[in-house]
Image 1: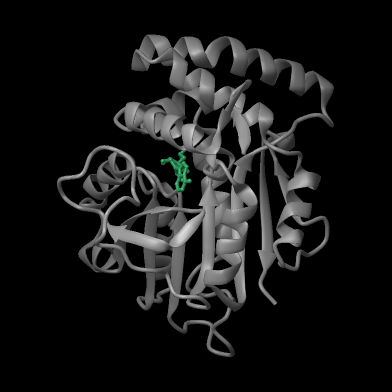
Image 2: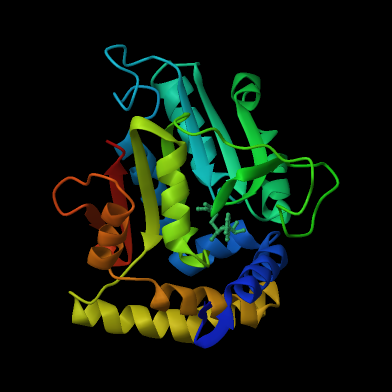
Length: 288
Ligand code: SAM
């Protein structure tokens, strides 16, 4: 089935391969580039995203005890920004050590950087953390991050296991879903692995259409400056050009909300929250 890669039409398999190439290529520079490209805003969005979910305390599926154990699955977790924040909020701020986090990504190079970064975390948080390689579109085939794997892709090994149905309290995906070749398949997998009452939460770049002036500034920054910064700082124009184009091609807030509903989730209100005028947006849904 044809899908897009930037403005080119390629097959799903080609897209998976090319996305793997992009993130293998940017893994080492990814965190530094994120700060440069977003003026540090990605940290504020991620802090807000995690605070809004209040891991370790929010009711989620834990019933009457707000500090009941939780299993959080951070999909496309890359170098760990969301997973680490989840652990800090749950263990340190909410005093709930029974929260564990699985950081999952299709790309072992990104995970390897994340695993290295995680050595800075307190020992109790490291013990509650695991890293697995998986394609978000098929969570029946995951494998633990191997200490030797640095090249994509994840799911070609025989040493795989499945994330069981109805096993996850909170599923998060930040700045990942627009890279997926088959977003409806990933949403179906999110629905499968979540417990009834479990929450799907997505942070992703979105549309600024409601604010024409901001939109003009944003477009010239992203199409003009970001590929150039990618070239100058990371020596990799093409990967950053891809990242900008993938944002452009991602559905609007409303269209993505409808996809979440189509996958079987219940959404509250509009189903999304705009951040910085819609440069990014948070979508949430609950599995009934
Ligand atoms: N969540 C992290 C963050 O917010 O910093 C990383 C985001 S990074 C922009 C996107 C991640 O999506 C990459 O690590 C990439 O390997 C991952 N990714 C792309 N396609 C994927 C797929 N089909 N399944 C799982 N992860 C995927």
